[in-house]
Image (cartoon, rainbow, N blue to C red):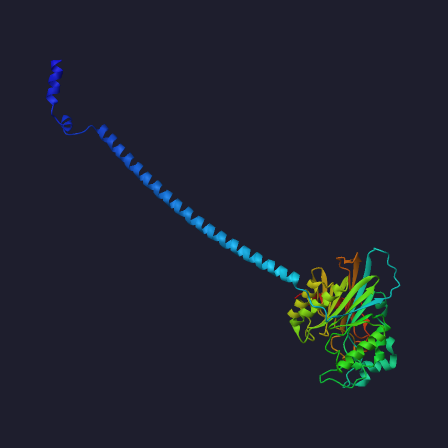
Length: 419
């Protein structure tokens, strides 16, 4: 016990460092060092976590603000668009096309084909191109259509196509010229007329309707236009065009016909397209056919105005669109299941004694109507013809073509349809 006390006394008052000869044991030093590092790391982690927390919080707040802003903008835009759409729909609903100035005439065409009650009805419509039944007073009389009429009479001209037209339900022509005795020739390069008796060329060949909306319907003034209407309708051929539309009752189906003259006003005619079609609908038309006089002469492809007006007519309710004026064949388009024949060329054409391009067609389509609704189908028939039975000049006797010549025209139409 005294020995232990002596030992304690020996080191009493001595610094711990001196106890180990001026050095700390390595184990204690390392332990303290580790504790210091851990403390520093802990502080660093706390600082980093706090920094990350602040960053995430900042991003969340910023994102939320952007989301709220974007949502607000989207909601505002959606409400504005909805309001505009609602206003537009209301305007369309409230807007009524004015058809008061459109003259609608109704006519029943007799048919020997019996129709059963509520049974599907088929109608075959034939459309043909420019028919100029007469000549220009400045043309040579000896080679004119008038000279052929004097020799052969009215039944000569359609003799090679009459059987085709007799087997359809409705044949429509573009009557390009006047039937009048007026001498008030308009100041223009070409002006066509023939006597009223020339209407028999059409009536004797199963032609049932004539479009007069073209640039030659008033070649001898307003009186010549009235004279032409009277001559044709007295011969049993309904006429239509401009603000006059026809509603034909054929086998119990109401067929609406309208003609639009585009050449002077171009896209400004869109209102007339809407008005005339709307008037036919109001009158109860179940099948609507629109004739356009449009395009550029001797151009084989339709221009943008033709295509725009044709599409508009279909959008408004036309079931078939037929075009003429270029005096040559243009392509055929199918738009929304409806056919558009952009130009049928000439047909029985007294406007030229020997045109370089004598190609033409009879465009036929057979429609099926069930319960007043036109069925979707592709029952079309293209009949290639020449405006003359002789290749060297125009004898004004349209004639169907066969074999290679027939195929040539079909290929030509297909090529002209690829624009």
